[in-house]
Length: 338
Image (cartoon, rainbow, N blue to C red; front, side, top):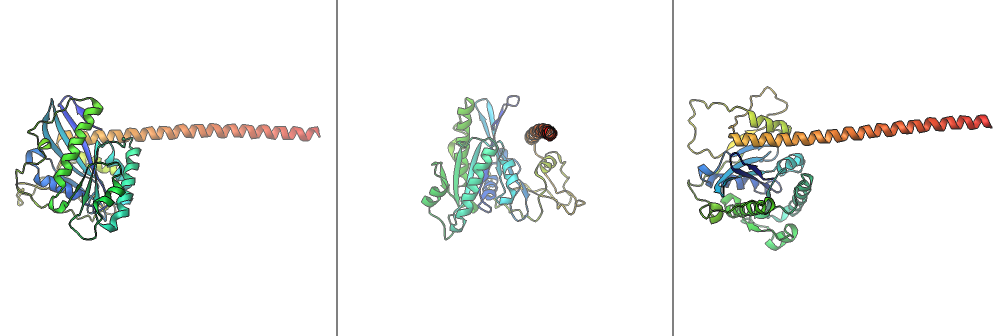
């Protein structure tokens, strides 16, 4: 759900990259982070899960400049591809304004693509997100052998006729086009839904369709996931408030950091020092805390519902107890009469 901050005159939109494991979701964000101008991108935060080189989530705020009286910011996330992290998928998808589904074009990945798409729709419904939110399909890994045709991929995944792009994310092919399309669609969607006057200026790279290359493209290192995940909400709280460590004086900071990699601490080793985290700016902290408050409020509502159901069950049991007692009395009276 789009966040309107009338104090700072900002509209924040959340775009989630969804898809099966190793389909290229993280690679998309890493490439965008490497080519976006430094004044238009924030830190790329990665949190690794066991057995998946991504990720609890990737977080990439993108500032596209002033549109009408508002500054537009995109928050880009990816979800973990493995099925066992479905609770994390659902949490990251909460409040999404648009979705990019990154499909693996390999023939052997057909079933995983379909399974992930079905799971995405289930989690949209679980989060009360309309199924008609903007979607863009990206058919990745078009440079390898044994891949499905575009027609077959569309028949399996894109029956509603959403925009789609072929891609080789490791080389950046199709990555920018995918992002430009979903960004434009997301802005158009909130314009209609919230009746907001949004006009994308021609000077914006969203309008031009090409990201200005302020710096040479850098090949981002992929995080190595060797740590076990911890509970999602607690990790969100820790990342939002943890104070960053000071860099060691013998290690000069790089001129253009590509990403910050954060690994979960092992549950079996609580004494291990926490990982190094780069603190997000104030608006990112506020956004994370607000998301946490919504999750806690939803949990409280669920607990209240459980308590109400328990009370009703106790009342019903008491009524049954009284009924059985009455039946016993009637039965004794019947014997006396005989």
